[in-house]
Amino acid sequence: MTTEVQFFVLYGVTESGATFRPSDWAERLAGVLAPYRPANFTKNHISYSPYVTPTSLEGIKAVIVDERLRELEPLAWKFVHDFAKDNGLKTNFGPHPQSH
Image (cartoon, rainbow, N blue to C red):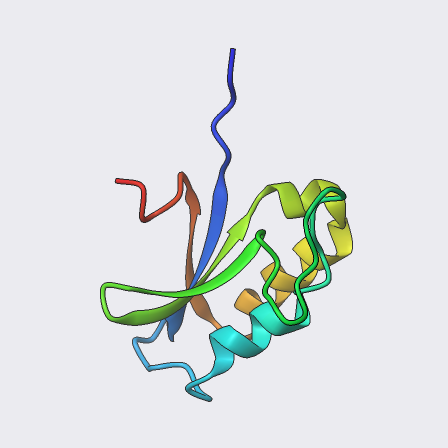
């Protein structure tokens, strides 16, 4: 039995509908979490963690966070959730949003 990996998505829009600023927030957040990688992950000079990916979904900046980050570093997972809550960002939890 295979368990589907779940993802926490932070959207660059607040619950009130405002665009979240600064415009590079997704890249900054992913950059902060870049050190958290699987043990066997090949380290490139500069790259994002495979668990935290900045992207655009339907024209909205977003960050997709792989739930496996929670197992690797629970405090990093908490940091991402707190960031979303503190900034009032819209979020979603479920299968990868670009796999549909």
